[in-house]
Length: 176
Ligand SMILES: [Fe+2]
Ligand SMILES: [Fe+2]
Image 1 (tube, rainbow, N blue to C red):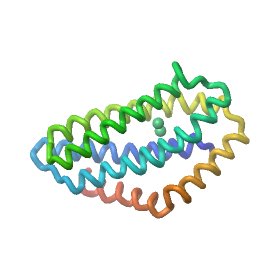
Image 2 (tube, protein in one colour):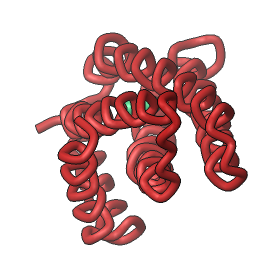
Image 3 (tube, protein in one colour):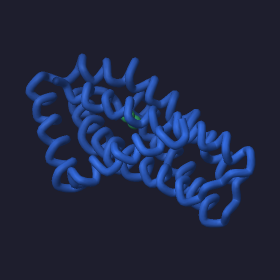
């Protein structure tokens, strides 16, 4: 098992919720804006995708890649960090759309978020993670797995992780 495989697995879970959000948007377009469900979906992206998944990338994987000589600025890591930031702005936009009951603004931010995240995941799966695997020693990779687990258990909480997996299932049943 490699740390990049763990992150790729999380990408598959995130992609499921992206499909849910896409289906949800079609309902919103038809005038059915279920704000409570919208908030649940956005909370998944805030916690599971951003805090937990991007947290592992930004605080653990990327710094190890930099230490191994992969440049941050002007390189793929810088691009990934910038895209995480853009994603956070779209999440904020979706949040305000829900709060203000502004379906149009919610939709615009959701669509942008979907497009951004799909391409972002593609780049990591096919480019960035290959660079990581080529640069990181097996010892560093093993250490990253340990830190991922520690982060998940101590900072995020195992039950939180489970809760979001369950939410993905629920929302898939409802919207897909
Ligand atoms: Fe990322
Ligand atoms: Fe990622």
